Image (cartoon, rainbow, N blue to C red; front, side):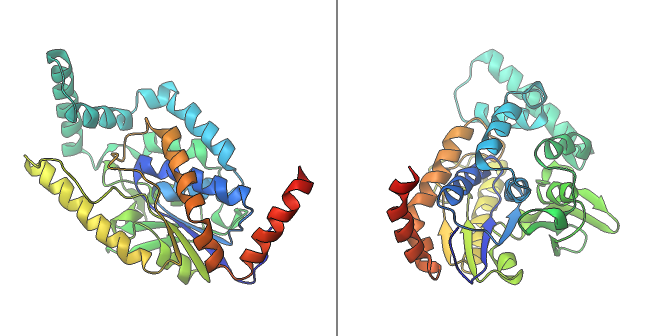
Length: 310
């Protein structure tokens, strides 16, 4: 274990499927024995962070992801349907595929017109329950915080106590896709609405050194924006990019896995995303060492002792 008298906070950002890269980040932290004194997550970052805070290691997490993505439950889910629709929009289709895509698109649109989310809280809860144990936030092995947004007041909500599952569910409720969570007078939705990478939260919760992981989409684009939907989504991406950069100013080290412009619902590149998270973290090890007092001596000693361990 690395010795330092400074508290290290890891802030895991939102980005849907792109957030699977967080697993690769945690793998390197585990292998290099870099401690985490406070773990904060937004959206998918809350899901991965919450699971890890409970003691689920990167290897077990990757296995659970693979099993879930291959399960009948996911294969028939609304999230998978959204991903297929996006994929069809980006490639040439034959007539049967166009008809199928048209019908799916109209079905999803009809759901969105009459419900607060394409995926209900009941359906989404089963996903959360698969990865997150039924415990209180105060019971996690690593101190953990989940970030959500109250749609009623517009305020940022930071969960530090209460049901871990409920906190993660609220943080992951992607607007329009997943129904917001009703909690008293509050209507809770994705933390990424106002806090895509929770660096400031990690700092406020006592972290002396903040390491942030951003998995937002690449800001540069060569796509043609032909419809109002295209323009709206592009504007949303740009807003998210600048919000994330504002948050990242609070971080001592920023890890940016190469996730491209992958859509939030596209989980088909899980293994590649995990590898990208691992690669980006290894590329930032020197920056992490520089940010942490005493860590350079630890890494030197670790290299000396490595042959003895083997």
